[in-house]
Length: 287
Image (cartoon, rainbow, N blue to C red; front, top):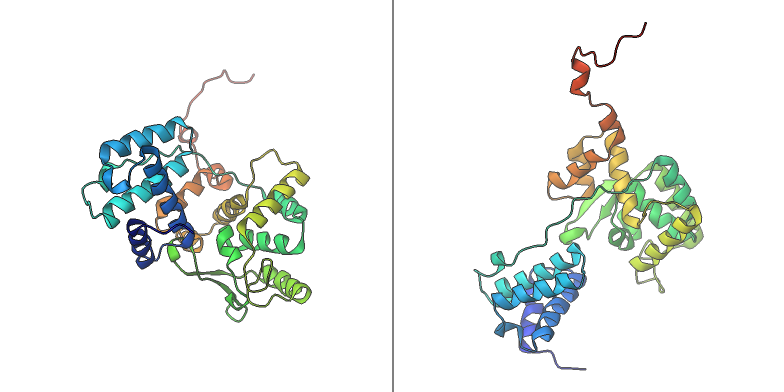
């Protein structure tokens, strides 16, 4: 095994102290390593002009804005925290995010989709995603003890950014989980992986999602995250306060949750057009 350089070790320590998730740490280390390899130099010997050149190179390769911004986050962390160059991070620009409306399933489509998911474990796990608006990583990390039937809540221990929260436990979902428990008898993790003491991997649920999409023949680009989008939109359409939805989704900013108002058909249909307030005659009156 190759020896870890002091600089990489320091960066890993900095990330560990700030409680960045293992996945984020791997992503940041890989990004800085890629930056270093492009120029064939240690990253602490590269400057802002090199970063600019690197970003232009990445854009030319056709990387998505999300991947580009993840690399920007890594470089900002490396230069601002590990190297202590406070003036550099703000000068590393993020890629501008294209505004896209989230894809949402109708309630009938949710039923079709979930019934088409192959395998009991994956089907119940993805039902949890829709029922409580969970991220796929959050449902994978659920433990049996996180289902609190006495208070009718689910304890999400490791949300995005390491934030814990409670979400509602649907009575319908509780019945499904009890049936699932009697059949599968999970021990520690509610949805175990290859062994009972490890959680199911997100890619297993993503693969089950793709199989369900193929089985239903949906033309929409459905992913596991589509169930979370559908959860939020359906709550909004049923009249739930957007601030409550924000808490349930674990969003830090209300502006993130507000994006769902753009796809809520009930919100759109119930909005009165200013034309309705005008006494206007555009076409001739009928005889």
